[in-house]
Length: 189
Image (cartoon, rainbow, N blue to C red; front, side, top):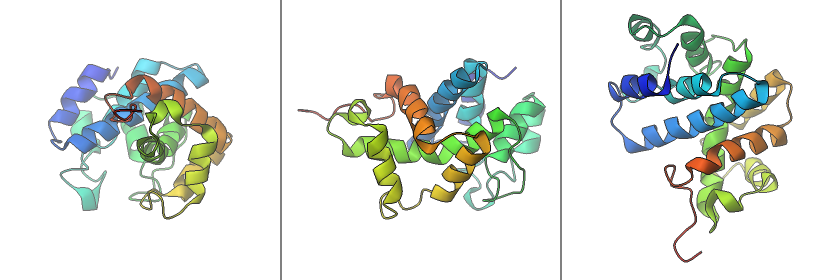
C-alpha cells in the first residue's frame, strides 16, 4: 500500500519546484482530513494526495498522460493510480471519480489552493480563516482566478456534501501544516 514516504520519494523523481511540493502537502493534508471524515485510512489518503501531480512539472500541457504506467511500474496499486487519474476528470481526461477517495481528491485539489490563498491574505494565517471567509473568496471570481470553482462544486455534489462542510474539513486538515504551507501567522500579527 502506498505510504507517504514512498509518495514523497516518487514525486521527488519528477518534481523540483517548491510550490508544487507545497501544493502536494496541502492536498495531502486535506486528504487526511477527508479520510477521517469517511472513516478511511488517513495515512493512505494523504499519500495519494501527495502524489497526485506526479507528472505535472514535466508535462504541464499533457498532465496525467505520463502518470499511469510509471506509477504502476513503481508498484503503486490500482486504487491509488485510478484516484490520481480521476482528479483530472473533465480537465485533462475522462476518468470519472467513483469512490470517496477519487471524489475527495478531485474536490480538494482545487479547494486546497483557494483555502491557501485565503489564508495568505489573513494576518493570522489559516488559524484566522473561517468557512465564511473561504466561501466569500469562492464567490469572488477575480480572487485566485485560476482555481476552477465548477470542479469544486461538482466534487462536493459527487460527495453528497455541502461546500461549507468540505471547506471546514480541509481547514482543519491544513491547520497543523500551516508553517510548512506558508500559511501561518504573518510577522507582527
